[in-house]
Image (cartoon, rainbow, N blue to C red; front, side, top):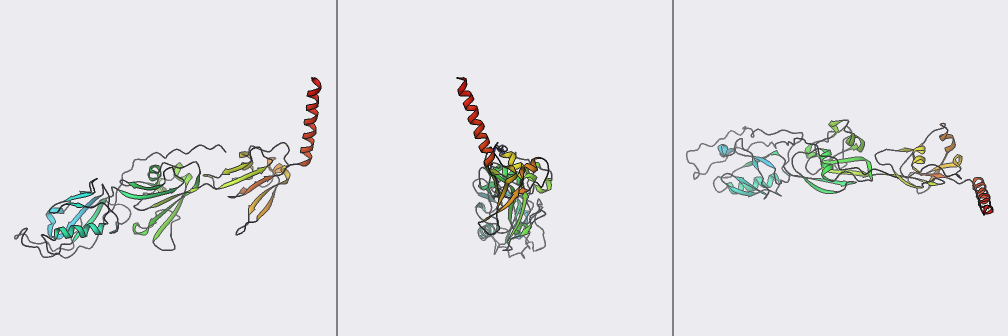
Length: 346
């Protein structure tokens, strides 16, 4: 079957934003006298984090930091050094922090970075406590699997939507099916799609969206933002078959269509041969939980006359069109006559 190869989905420009992690602020620790003996510690544990760029979801202390992530720092004893400041993780993987210097951040979780900074600040503060907030995600791993041209783990810089993530994976292959499944860690909350449900473990949110909805873009709300560690799986097209007395027997991909009718499959098979017995056609369908096929009678002659029920074929169905013995004998005799007449001319 001739099918146009789906080109990579064009990237759509979208501003990516991410939420800050909010944690209860610790009670101030005693400040060591060395840095500033005149400094009065700020013991207001209710002070809020610096203003953050909001997004749907919640940052988690187990999020793995990457290059271009932007973070905020809260150290109660050192307000003037960190309040309302944003720190970007450099491509080298380090982040430059006042009083501490360069600290390795890439590959660490938020919690691990907090512990690393606390250890460094321990040289000038007694039992420092640090809170790291995510201001904006600059790099996050998203797995795109299945029928895309470059499946695998892709590092997404900034906030990206579903279309952009699929585009990063090279777009759909020729064998794309009709659904895209998104699996998301519940730390980010449930996926904002109508058919969302939790998996049996209760750790992940799962939702599906049709390929047609993604490509047509009729409902922009379904082009959801992707989150760190999302798994996007593109289904492979199911196949139906046409065999017997058809001009192009073989398998035909359902593709983005959820089903094809009997006449549609016959059309893809380029119609009947001249010796076909269309009134004796049948659909061979696997019985559920069995390797045996059931036979469903189909009168193609009646369907082609615009009557009868044009049954939809299910994945794996076989449309079988038998040969007519009478027609075969007739055409053989006719061929013999024509050949004899041609020979007589010479």
